[in-house]
Length: 460
Image (cartoon, rainbow, N blue to C red):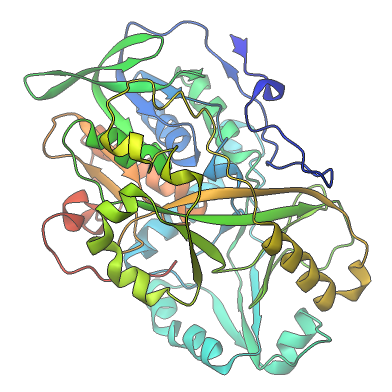
């Protein structure tokens, strides 16, 4: 096996202020030689791809996972790391319940710590309308048996002391928690390898090998792997990959920013308030972000699917900032990706690593100190950007692709993919293996986005 060195990755950089502009991920070794043939090839080494490879291998199928960069290098390491049931769209709830059960079991099965802890999530707000929205989710919680409780103003203040304004209330989602973005996808990849899967980093998929309309293999930059099935779990790159074979997958990405502090005092494990979300990492540092603060960059692919995404855009108009950036000319939604046929387009961007929004980084740190004055002077360790791939209804696609026999898609997680990752991978493996699915896959079928059905926008 060959090691993929992070020091050789194109996204390793430091800002002029000295902090890293990417999250650090646990390295995973690569298998040097491509197999000639396997049962399934998984495209994409994020949380969804590695979970899918793991659960496919557990079913006794031979699996090869190919990743153009390195395992966990894009969205899966740039997330907050939340594993939640709270405030999810009802369509996602069965998948969320399944995921939480799977998270519970993974450490024992794989023998590696993914950082999963059921710490509970604590929310607080000074906006009565936001509080009412949380309370309105109560019937969903009761329907699915989620242990969640509204907090009074005093209870919220006890859990999140605040000196700038007064909380009107909050909630405590007791059984939810977090996992480590730096560890989870690598641990799942190693778990898949223990069951016989092979892992190939720095190995971009270039296209499907088809015989009479069915999968017969996958072309990669290192050669062709014969296979009966291909699962595309390529995150923000999925629509571009599918479009090359005549499959329409409406997908658009928003650019988000997060940062990580140096280790500090324990102020709580997972905290959320309107202008600050905090997740404590195993080493005592915090991942910080502001919910809903994102940039919707105008791209050729975004314009291509503008009609499908218009209801979501109208609903999120106040939460996003429109912009025009480098993604118009390079990356998965660019003009070359939309109209070009260069088979090397995927390896041209080994790691999709947008720069963090510096104004947002400054706002996050200012909000942290305003909420917790004792953290004045706390240093940042890293800050990064990420493109979060979304579907028009903000619900993932986990589906067979009807036009091509043996082709499956698991993408469009809309910012929910990390917590749902094990469940999505489990369901995808069941579909590929033609097993009885653990949850009803109807809400996750690809056709709902392209057959003219009414799009109901879910929660981001």
